[in-house]
Amino acid sequence: MATQNLPLVSIVIPSYNDEDFVGDAVESAIRQTYPRVEVILVDDGSTDGSREVVRSFGNRIRQERQENRGAPAARNRGLKLAEGTYVKFLDADDILVEDCIERQVQHAEDLPHEREAVVFGDAIWVDEKGNELDGYDDLRGRKRDEDPVTHLLHSNPLTSCPLHRREYLQEVGGFDTSLPRSQEHDLHLRLALEGVEFVYRPMPTYYFRQHEGADRISGRSYAEQGLMTHYELVEDHAKLIEKHRGSLSSEIRQALGQSLWRHGRAILREGHRDVARTYFDEAMRLADGGACVVGSTPYRMLRQIGGPVVAERAMSVAKRVLP
Image 1 (cartoon, rainbow, N blue to C red):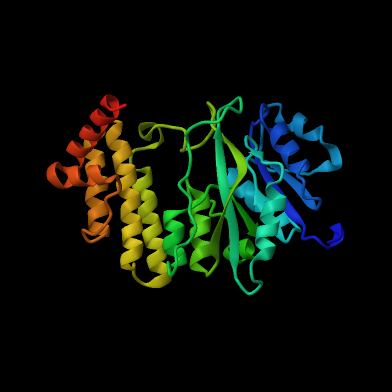
Image 2 (cartoon, rainbow, N blue to C red):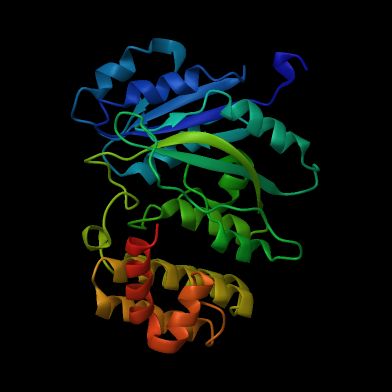
């Protein structure tokens, strides 16, 4: 297909005081193997040297500056400026895999045209120097006959994993700037509730950088990010789904309960026993006592016998003792 007939992809980069990293982010966008991209960088009121770094790219990218309003507002401004059929969001301290756009456009274009869908892939977690870390998101495809919203609750990707269609983003109004956290998960859920299916295609999409000073929940302890953060997030998701559907299905209740149980286990491992119990109790309530317990078969058996605290302690001991 001739280059001029390929769909345009808008890569939107919000930047705030990212002097050390923004150059790498922009370079990764410019150097995509896909030939039809526009790169839009919205500076969110930076006060460091990042503005000079960005200016060095000249007219190879589109640049705009606004008062500091947060990354979601900067992404929304980039979305308003975007002209592409597709939109890829990229934070200024992350790096796109060089053939990410090419492969995701192909995946998206291969879907039936009558199917409202967003293709998403995997993130590679790296440290400040680009060394790969053990962090990952357990993403998967939708199971046969699985409700798309239930699938998304089990497999909600990070900000730069999907290749969005611009028209779908515009229809739901982009990111909710009133939310203090997990705005991408809220966006994805609103899209799914409006009938957009998230289609998983396993492939690395970008390098998700963890570093000191990054305003990210992912790389911080639960105590640092707020022990009730994920509890409140699940509550928000439940309210949003109820608003759209009137009630929560048993499958959605189970998915929300499993999310609470998973985070409750992590909080317990950090020593916050009382808060973890709050997570476990709400998980059981949401799932009506159903299959909300997340863990291996030995863990689930131990939990039945002695409860989650005993089970977690036993699993921790076994991990230290067994080779």
